[in-house]
Image (tube, rainbow, N blue to C red; front, side, top):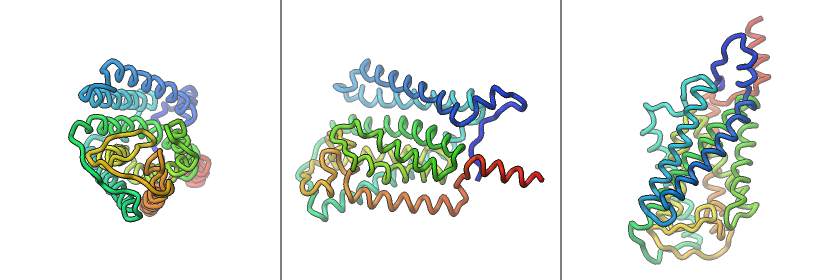
Length: 299
């Protein structure tokens, strides 16, 4: 299928340069940086670390900052409709993503339990939910907009789907190396299990809603329901667990994302999604291949 192209004015050399995928990516990097700074400032202003309501509100505002910046960038720099955030399918696709995220994480924790590395020893009240929700909402929007909405999409338009998949997955994995308890095993695990799965669901729909719902629900279920670390961050959940045994099974201090069960289950699902995308003709060829095909069709 053809990639999402910007609306370049005919005969404009300047807009042709601006609309090259790498020019757009270069322009988007400082925007992402500014959005991150603004979101952090909002969190400090609302005392997100100590206030339950402030935690959720800062996450929602931060997500809105990234959403607004992306919408303005696509609408006025790429000069096209923001199809990645089409309104009509939003609720349905978010719900699908949430269901997948909770289900996958539940299977992973279930495998840990069967292997004797996870068991429930108590419960907690609703006071744990604000932080857990924020841990889902903000990364779900900000990281999917940055990694799938910009990085993957623009590299795909230039280098094709396979190269964009490899690059975005590797970048996503390495981006977690700064987290507490991170190891190269954790980075590789995230690259395969999340990098493939999230890019694949974007390819299937060509919208970000499913990926956002999946990412947010994965984080929320991981910390807010099952009480396991979320990318190295300690999050209290509704369930109070005992976690022990081999780090290969539990992911150690980093959490289930660095575990063998997550790598196997989530990567397998990601491959299934890739097969679906392939069969539906959602893969994009590199730009030079498309140019040759277009030239041949015009002869």
